[in-house]
Length: 442
Ligand SMILES: CC1=C(CCC(=O)O)c2cc3nc(cc4[nH]c(cc5[nH]c(cc1n2)c(C)c5CCC(=O)O)c(CCC(=O)O)c4C)C(CCC(=O)O)=C3C
Ligand SMILES: [Fe+2]
Image (cartoon, rainbow, N blue to C red; front, side, top):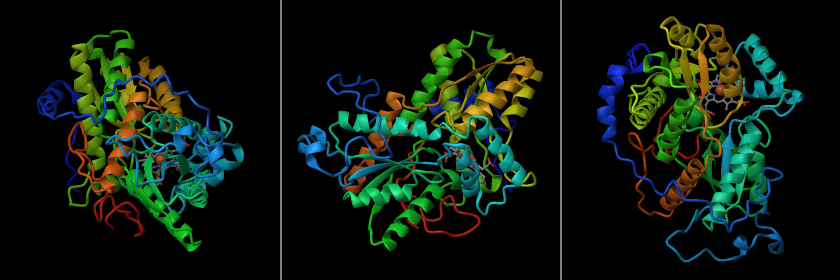
């Protein structure tokens, strides 16, 4: 189907990386805030939020609110996230107990033809961890980090946390927020790339939440920040983490070491149609490929080494007859061992936290494969609550708010171009059924 070969054998580095590196290096990196700003020591670390709402009440009894909520915004050019009253951190969701595992899996795969055997084997991964995915706890950490960074900038907006596939459901969180007076919300999802699964599906679920609440007489507006995989706070910070991991991995010769960039596989048909809908497609794979290249190049320059790597995939599901993006990380490790590679640095660029795809598919399965093959494997951390990453997300929230106020913005991107914050009509389509989607032109 005319798929461009973004990377014939999946390999990057050597001749190809060097050639591409010259082009990439010309791209500009513009930061909207300094990335090494130290935290403000006068701001207390604050308490862990108890539920899905930020620690202080939304717009309730003023006497119980933080002083930041009572003071007018400081008179600087920064108007924070106005016109939004709240930030919504929106994620995939995951079970937190044994009983929640199967209902969660059924919800995720509803109408999607994922075979029962696949569901049972995925359920086993969760059961092996007491039925609890790490994802919600990690997102509560991110919720708190976003809250703290907003307060550090004097922005009083509460940070809500809501999921697509498990409690706390985004719809319920938005309902509570509406009851507390919230009318306009800016969403940041935990999924950075462009594709149906990583962008439009979130927009469909936002639209469904808005509609369900409208049916109850609760009118709420939700906008979303742009997909941020090419924001410098994502790519530059990850380049630093990869560089540190290569430093830590014990100095094997360059030709015995590979950087293995991993992301979630998706069906080829979904990748073919990912992108702004101009007929080009393959944006999901292209974004990962570009990012893997710049990270490899940046780490190579910093360390003065000739690094090589490849973009590979994990967590394939669906029918075995449907083609999904390949190669699988485990097959790739086998091939590397055959080629005499001794050390791999596994970089999960597709994910922002150590949820199940990372702790099971990489830290368990891929690590076992590597051990069987005698490969030494170092896993690069995910971005998590890295302060530079969190500051970048808050920059993006401020950028989206400025756009909503009709101000001109200069969106930072490295490499390549920034994605639009209002998705184009027809981008990353739902290939099964047409559904309304929020935060876009269609
Ligand atoms: C692109 C992408 C991301 C990254 C963007 C994002 O973060 O959203 C992602 C994230 C995640 N995927 C997750 C879990 C699952 N994904 C599944 C199934 C699928 N994922 C797909 C794609 C993606 N998935 C696709 C095309 C399917 C096939 C069925 C369908 O078209 O929907 C299934 C069903 C069983 C299976 O077959 O594996 C499960 C349980 C969890 C939670 C982990 C935890 O609990 O810690 C997270 C963060
Ligand atoms: Fe998934």
